[in-house]
Amino acid sequence: MRKLHPLRLVVVAALVGSAGLAVALPSGIAAAKKGPLTATCTGLFGGASQQVLTGCTSGSSKVTANGLSVVTITGATSGTSTVYWQSGKTTIESFSYVLTPGSGSCPTFEGTAANDVVTETVTVTGGNAKLTTGMGGTGTACVYTTGGSIYEQGLGSTTF
Image (tube, rainbow, N blue to C red; front, side, top):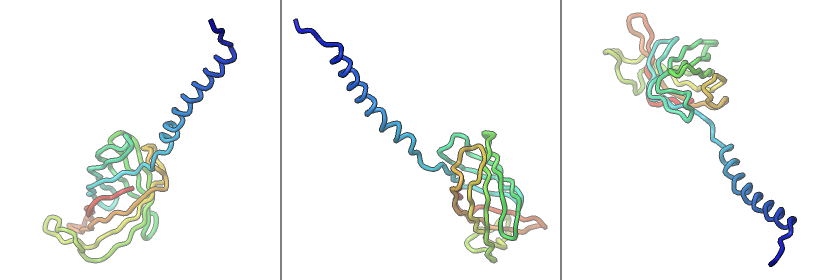
């Protein structure tokens, strides 16, 4: 009967362990390389200081289907917004915008043509909904003035 040396068993065990580690490492590394988390909302409606976001999807479970955006205008064509998601989490963003006079391709709202089309550029700056800071996008909304009130209605999807 052949006698196995303890050293040989240790080396074989170490090699088997290394192979297991080599197999486990790539999946761990791949899991660490997640893409940026953004959110896309298909609906936006509200006034100049608050809008409701609807139809939102994201890779973050903290971003739910709907949110309320509370807007603060900080400059002539810029501001900040905090989105309060139904999950109780928040996204803080900064934005700049350009107003284009006229109704563009906006539909009428309660019989009223849009006064302006606003194009916003949004950048995520914080919050606890885990969207990637620095990511952003653009969105377009139609602006209506009726009865002394200003309303915005999104035109297409908005990603941030």
